[in-house]
Image (tube, rainbow, N blue to C red; front, side):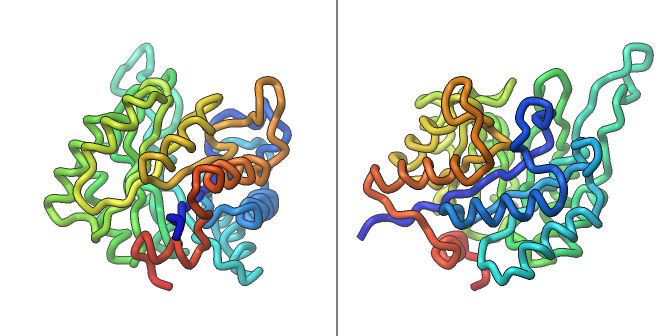
Length: 291
């Protein structure tokens, strides 16, 4: 039998991509509809951010999260829901006072996860990373990581451990060794994000070899490396992630008209490499989630 491979779709993200593509969903209805279309195309998991409906800016507004999740659940869809906790970790030192954030972007752990504690998705992302992230710093201290991990575990939500470099994996292994994450842990190897690990064969192999025994893992590459990294993840035994959060294009100069075309191509890659596209039920079994 062929190995079932989980396709996760990162539906909208928090980047300034709405100015680059008219297909990035913004409103709760658009996000929910595009998530369901991605599921129909083969995604067993949908990874969700929300945006301010009028501006497209990233948001932590729990009413927006509630509407997106309820719209998906009200359809009876079995898709695995994965909510972000990443918003609230950006720091850009003010030129006059480096102790002050020039652009509001930092939040306490509870404010980054209150929507998860209320809505209880199957999965939530948990960034195990402090790094330069584009032009700003992305700050996740060990104490904050532990606070979020402890709270979401008590709520019955599985963290997807987002790692962008080898040092992040070393910290995640340390926290896993302390019993912070319920087995089997689930890692997302994030490749090609400035300024983390590059989207290369060598990076993915190095990160894979640092995973704790028995861990589940997925990987993605940004931009033009989305599909090469998807193929490599399948070859190396992992799961895959695609979506408009990470890449806006089907080919150079050709915008993806929503998430479904990206998922359809990923599904084709999975099948052409001799694997099968995992159903939500298979994804739940692989990841150790409740049926």
